[in-house]
Length: 471
Ligand SMILES: *Cc1c(COP(=O)(O)O)cnc(C)c1O
Image (cartoon, rainbow, N blue to C red; front, side, top):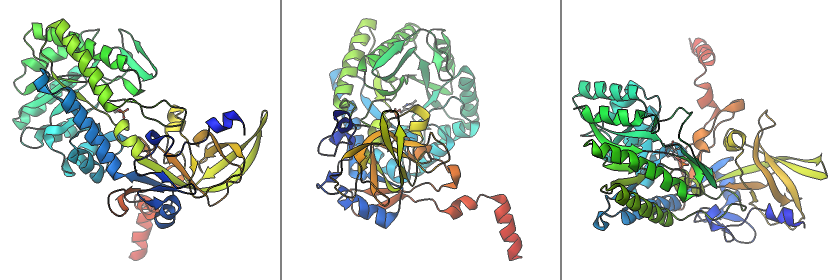
């Protein structure tokens, strides 16, 4: 077996626990999740299937909430800390229940996300609203929720400041707002870049002074309460220096504001903390380490600027939900395709870019494990592909799989919790898979699998014809 192929083999839960949900086990023959074997899960609930470990999700959310509270505890002269779950990563009523009961707040970015968070029982005092183009309806719901409106509307433009002011005065309320600041710090993967100017749609710029202008406007309005500053610098970030640099830039703006008598009560450093997707990824940083490093950097910057340490929050999405979900697929067609210098097995599964668009969208890497049986067949270089009419419909671009993989086998793709279901589509009229909760009691649906009839229910012509027949 070549060394290269061995490196492309999916690590088992015992080898890389950071890649798999807490309850994932491999008994030498089969993978199990929440004490149920992968083949049994697919047999009982169909495929493709997103399997979410509820105890794992609750635990990760609790870790984030705890480390932020501990490391920014105000008894240390800090302003307190909190963690908001970025709900766009994956959202359902049960997901919101699990993360909020573990102590996290919820960040939303649309009418649908905000409505679902509130209906699922999230405390408005721990809910945020983002977006570069919020509608009046979204703002009205945010300002009207609970007794004081949601905890923070993160405004993204000068025009929005005016709109929030208008809607808040119409409703006779005081809206709590933060400013999304583009600090010029961008990160992803290992390195970060820090520039002065920004050429992107989000936020108000630090360099050009529009962030400062927005803060002044907010502070001057009766119906607005200025909470503080926010920056989100990217995703899948391993480099804490990038967050420290971004925090320091935000605090330099807070200092400018303090000199004008405007207090920044809160600083939000956004999300983007990296997780493990394949055996080639390094271990992710522990939330404790992240919070401690940020606390140190923020305290230092506050000392330098002679500022009181504000309340500090973060908004992790992927690092809360990503590792808690495994997608199970059934294998269909297997093809041996000659490529330069050898051959590659194309292993087709019963889903693809409709349940995981990230490989096509971001060239994201995943891995796949043969989950239903042990095989001692020699490893082959393989590519796991979907069933869509696109050659870019790739689930795992390079992986080692046993050469005898065949129709009916079950493949498990770990770390699909973030931006899997939430970015899923009905391309080729595929129904979207359900999300099954395991690890807390019996397996149960968190999100039902879609049926073909659900898709056809939206078809005006089909339904007009059916109504016609009934007459
Ligand atoms: C997407 C997003 C997040 C979460 O990012 P992750 O990479 O999932 O942690 C947090 N904050 C904002 C503003 C976002 O847009």
